Length: 213
Image (cartoon, rainbow, N blue to C red; front, side, top):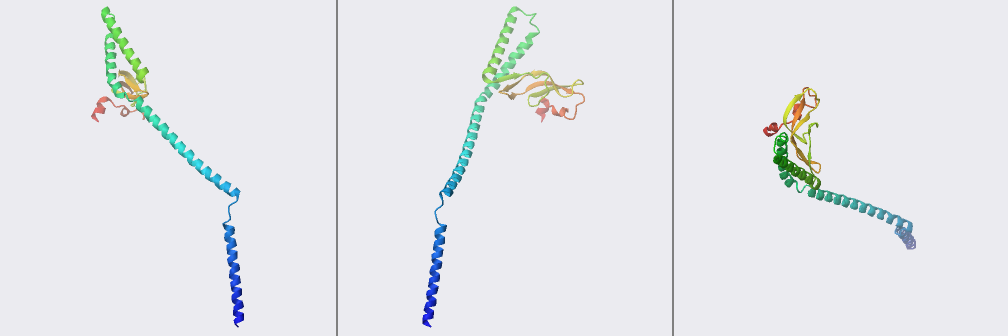
């Protein structure tokens, strides 16, 4: 009886040993080093991922650099806006003085005519220098379609000959700084007698109406 038991135990031990050996072999097979092909594939995937990250970072940096340059240039372009706004009324005075004397040139003395020509020359030179050097440009509005972004209506009158609001006359000219309107033109506006749905008097606000709002 004891011999049978001993044999049975030996068989169980042998079976357990065989199972342990099989498990060890399986573990060894599972932990075997990757082939060269698999290693290369993994490295290529990592390189591609790193390259994508680099390209994204480079694109973000380039966009940041462009934005900073644009903001810096805009700050430079408009740094003198306050100074130019102070100079504009002086140009207005020159323009008014010239206009007030235009109708009486023939009846005035030679000295007055010389003065008129001198003032005109100064005004033209100043306007030209501000436009060419600083980007300040005066614009004419007479005959243009009324644009609330460029024009401020001082007066309005009706006309049966038009179908949309038109600037009839410039009272004070407007100015742009590098294509940005920094002072609207003060104008007289012709309004159609029978305005359409898109061209009512509500679309044109006069100076007095603006001040009362």
